[in-house]
Length: 300
Image (tube, rainbow, N blue to C red; front, side, top):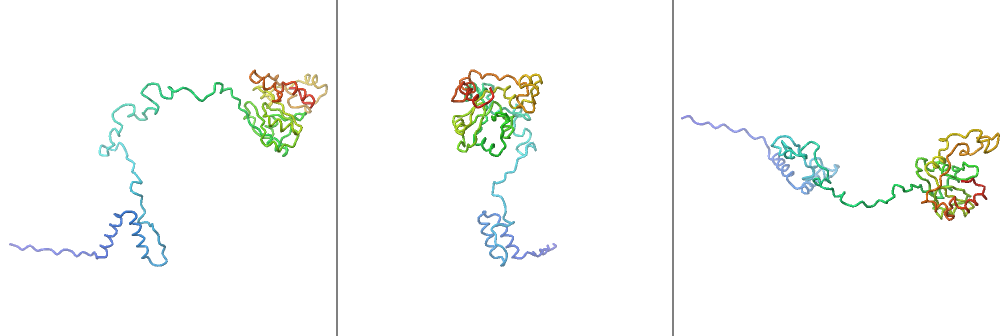
């Protein structure tokens, strides 16, 4: 019987130092994060002088466990646990592409927000006046800078002058401007102002310096005639001659005197008490009209 010859195994060219390094590297990644940082710190302390000591390096940078969750791709076979119907079930509205119901859908019965009463809206909210607040200190500042100058010959400042001075655009004026009294201690000029609404403090501040405030009603047509008189036809020369005499120069007249503007509408019953009240300086009050006559202001 032939003897079995045993072949000699090849020599392992692995040194003890290499096995030690490989074992340490495997144990390093199995340790908790804190131990790994301390381990790298202890290794960094053994570095030669001149090299920076860091807690983190490229070999221990990684996310915390569970920080990143891989997105599951659906429709990739039954082995992926989200194949075939992709977790939507069989048929139905929710199984279709783009399907689903609104979050407030309750199976066809009246929705909750429709069962609740309507609250929070005024009865006449659509008729609320959208007034632009204008403080007297801003008017005084624009007059001091020379940007606000009256266009009319009687020296009265109107909303058209405010628009021409760049205080606000004409498109922002929906129903008018309300004059407020903030900064009234800075008033130093004699101001004559016509606005739809004015506060008591603003009236007192203007009149304390010799000025006068008149509150005038403007409907939509009157507001358009005030801000954009050039949208209306020009007055014929015969009418200008009858009103201002023969040989009158239209360039010397006020802008609103050279156009055929509509007649001013009276205020509605809701605002009639306001424009007939002297404390509000309403233009329909007899005392206000008499005061305007004394100051040489134009009739309204």
